[in-house]
Image (cartoon, rainbow, N blue to C red):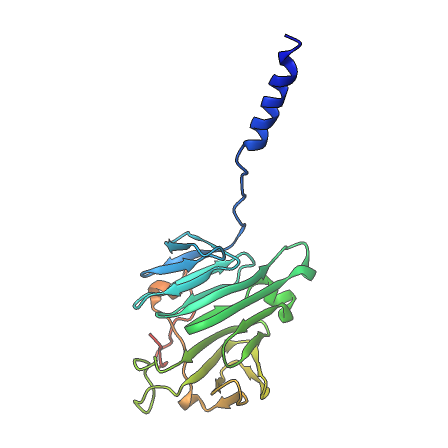
Length: 243
């Protein structure tokens, strides 16, 4: 028995070493709360998932909405984003610990299409830690509810006062608070009730008259909360709704 004891111990150690490693799933940073169609997420590891209501969003996810699809995501700090049809947004960075404001960091890359956003706790206590990046400019927030629409020869169905498609570039509207839009050519503060436009990364952001502004709004089924109230991005009577 003494002869086999060391051998048995060695075999047990080898078996333990060969046990598969358990990889913990990444912590979710948000969740899909409303969805009207197909929402696809490409994970940081290259895998692809078909999302549904209550699906968990992770840092590094690239979210893509199909045609006719609106998707509303609520993040861990209470902030919310609604993606309109044909949009792509990457959660490039997301760090939130309610007890550690110094670690706050949100970077959302709007790669295509449009969105409407309401900032959460991070935007209230550490506004410089929230940034929305696009190909033409970076949007910083000041406790904000705003809309953004990137036109790249794909906004033919968006209504305008002239009846023509919106000009290519980044269209912005602010419903509450303010945003600071920056690129290599300059920066512009856009406040509640104002509209903005950035033609390219090499032209400065500008404020445009309300009659020329493009406002991103959402269907009631996506914008409305379960309780009474106006909800997120719901169009008022007479507003030019981007749908």
